[in-house]
Length: 236
Image (cartoon, rainbow, N blue to C red; front, side, top):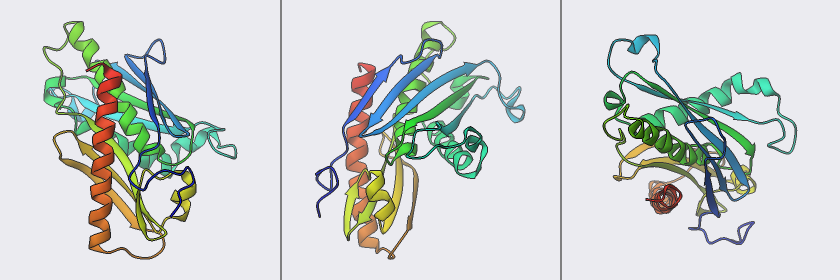
């Protein structure tokens, strides 16, 4: 099978992360994965949702939106409040919470805003990968300001997509592959090897356990590379 951009089946698209992309956020990064570009910003507030007040525990949440001309046709701005965007926002939020020691964060809330500037497949996984870098910068700032004694992170968090395309497992699907895939799966992992989320479904033909294992192996290979790119961006 020849992929649209001539990549090998186990190859990621080119990845780039530009930190400090915006002036005012405690952490920000523009992540590019192929032609997909997502602006991720982290905002820290000294308050938590009502159900966590006086608990000593913090919170990490996310909001995801596609800007009006991030795709081939215009997307209404109020689409951010509709089902798909809300579901993806929750997906990003719970993924990043699994990378944070919330009790060590104290009663603070970190909101990760993930705005898709350009979409070519894998926007939610790019958002998670970029949002981790923005989150790391925001938490590092709290340590530098003396508001936290240590960085309350349990490990890195990154995500990628995999799928069965023309009967072959492929890593990091672009849009053209995504819409044609028989199986589309998103995988989120932490750098200690733990899985945070695996979500996938047959879009065409059903898939076997052997094919699922092959996709998970590919995803782990790709995510290990994304951990490297995160560290490189953070100068670690």
